[in-house]
Image 1 (cartoon, rainbow, N blue to C red):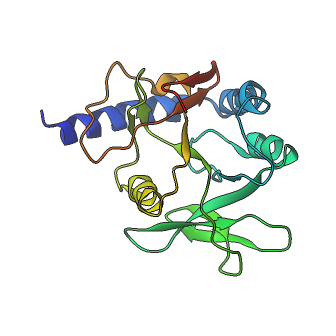
Image 2: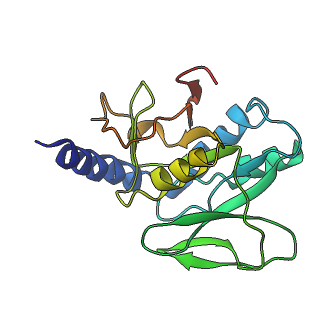
Length: 193
């Protein structure tokens, strides 16, 4: 089986497990994530943190985002521009949050574009060394690569439920590894940084 086929199989399997979680369990797990990481994610006042509005059965990072904002973070959300690119728009009071494509929600075009210092990254599956499987479209990999070409090195924190961990993700050269992952069990660093 090719790495691409194996990733597709793992994605399908782990998303099915996530989808099978009762809504109230996902809510409790999301609140536990905010408790685990709300006070320990290293950030300076003014750091830009990208989060996301949950779609389908994703963890809800909005409680965590509130905790980080209360510690001085500026918040942003990803916005899909086209079939290949996302940008990050600042989440500000008074700027509308609108549908931004593929079921996602983000600030409208009046919001300024920003480069995140910390990215809360949704995913399908992850392993114990920080490799991740996204949803298959490559939006985050391309956005991270674009930021790095500009000399910006955001810290990448995967957001998942425990059931999304797999023994091993078949990493390919274009894949971007996580610095840490946050699940309902806790906050785990994969490498220095």
